[in-house]
Length: 225
Image (cartoon, rainbow, N blue to C red):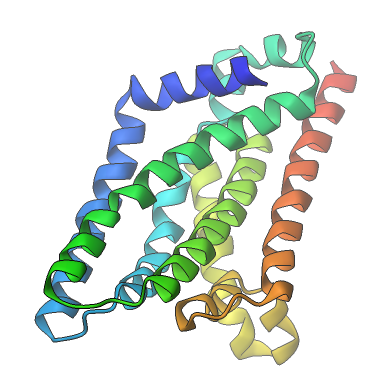
């Protein structure tokens, strides 16, 4: 697994992908921060709440190439026949993407430092919001990875990922029943400083489900070959 993590991190950091993701997010986060700060709302949780929608479009940058590129380039066969288990390969790619997200989140501490200089932000609510944001990204990455495993076209994988995420925005408006499937609704409590155990469990369950589905897709492809 560690070899896969190392390989994936190199692919992110030795190519523009990782820097585009980190740079684009921090740039847009800074714009949101400036707007709130300029309006007198010195609360980082507001910024994270708005930034959560940005991940709908940024996460596919990390996930669209995970398996589709391997399939397109013909290197997928090496993964399927390697002595490593498919689960360790999938988890290695997943963890590498999460490390990039963590680096990005750590970058926002600059903004927290600015708030500390000018006032007294609530660090408990800020950390709670960051936890929720991390869990949201974890769920997004797990689905994006699954989408990448079912097609060899990176663009198709990103369109599927973005389309499903946007659909989740509107599900609660269709029926209250679907609110349980809305990742944004799950995240909603964290910026209020509330860590609800059921939301944490649902985020983790969602992530585990799509990690396992990705393994199943690869396993079926391996058995066919």
